[in-house]
Amino acid sequence: HASTHISALPQEVLVRLFRYLGPEDLCRCSQVCRTWAEVVKTGSLWRHLYPVRWARGDYYRGPPGEPDQDPDEDWVQNLQEEGRAYQEWDEDADVDESEEACEDSLAISAVHKEKKLLNGMIQNLLPEVGSSVRTLSLAYSAAVSSKMVRQILSLCPNLIHLDLTQTDVTDSAFESWAELGACRTLEHLDLSGCEKITDYTLKNLTLGLGDLTTPRFSKNSPDCKNKLLKTPPSAIKLLDQHSRYSLGRARTALVFKWRPGGRSMSCSPVWVLDPVELADIEDAADWARRGGLAAGNSEGHSSILGVQVQTGGRSCCCRRSMKRSFRTDIGSAYLQQLYGTLGEMQCGHSACCGSDATLRTVKGAQCEPQATGGSTELWTKCPSEGKTRTEQSGACRALRFLSLSGCYQITDFGLRCLSQGGGLPLLEHLNLSGCLFITEVGLHELVSVCPSLKDEHFYYCDNINGPHADKASGCQNLQCGFRVCCRSGE
Ligand code: FES
Image 1 (cartoon, protein in one colour):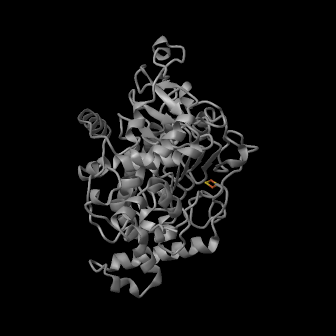
Image 2 (cartoon, rainbow, N blue to C red):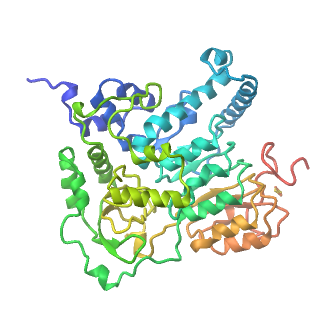
Image 3 (cartoon, rainbow, N blue to C red):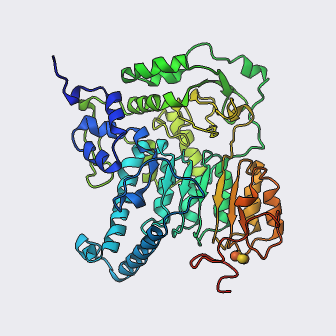
């Protein structure tokens, strides 16, 4: 019998094997050879990121738990103590951030490790796989800064779940959302205990979620009907020889033919695929965009999460934009337009790729609408509804969970911002405990555009006679020692 060496395995098989590994093992694999280093940068291997846990040796990388599941109290307390120790050490240690300086304390070294890991992710991993990231949890991180969050959000335009509980972030962390539709896939946002957040963040959030009140097309438009797809979309051309297997399955999965064009009323074709099949296709397109996986193609490889930084090959447009400092509304739009014109948009990040094809995977009721200016895309349908949300409008405003508990600077103005653009039709859980400056007027305004809100998951100050006062759950911060509450200490 002829034996097959592991190096002869096709990339699809390698990726399947790598799916059984945790982030630490993937990093080791990335240092074996250039081919493996490229395969490790496959997006589907990095869907869910938990750097705070990883820095402490817990290498979980599955989907997040239930929103109402409380984290382990001891674990949270440990993290808070580590954070305090690190802050004291950081204030005392002027310039000396060497390994030796923090070896003395396990707590300090854990936060130090977390900081290095975050920097490694931002520099090496996310520019490659950012568009595939769905979950990011930085809850209780003492190492994360607003600048880091800003960079991460800019590199991960398709986030669904973002947890920044009890971090020190400010409004500037969310600047990349100040663009219509910049975070339209977001379903879960936890900013509990982020005391520096103000209405400005909510203003950016509502912009980023998109606008439901501007229908982009009418299904009966003759223009649209005339553009029904007759031939396979050009997106398929992206897939190279590595992905023929996936492509074959994509063709058989074709079930739906058209979608609205971008922000204009023009139409472009769409293919709707079974979400289960899409991961492979996304991966294949990922590889194709990176110019294939032949060993000779790679000029160098880096340890994904950090330590070695030898960048080789083509850099992603997101990385290029990082070098130009971070985006402003107008600057970003201009850069996107410019890159689109120059044909440089090849990273596949949905927020920045305004042309060519983008491949994405959707699960559950997440509908992944995308304004892409007449591009051809592969889409999945909403299993729960049997059709894409884009049949109704270009935006989704998919937010289901929002916690601003302890964000005491929020006012009615912030709530009014959230109620704009069509409100939050899917929002089920809203925590405004400890928001001292909001009033019943602001609450009524917001609740009137949140038809899915569940009373048992609706929390606000007990001193406000707001909507659903008899059934809502009241303030959650009464017994909480570390989050703002107007009645703490009573
Ligand atoms: Fe008023 Fe907690 S904020 S009861």
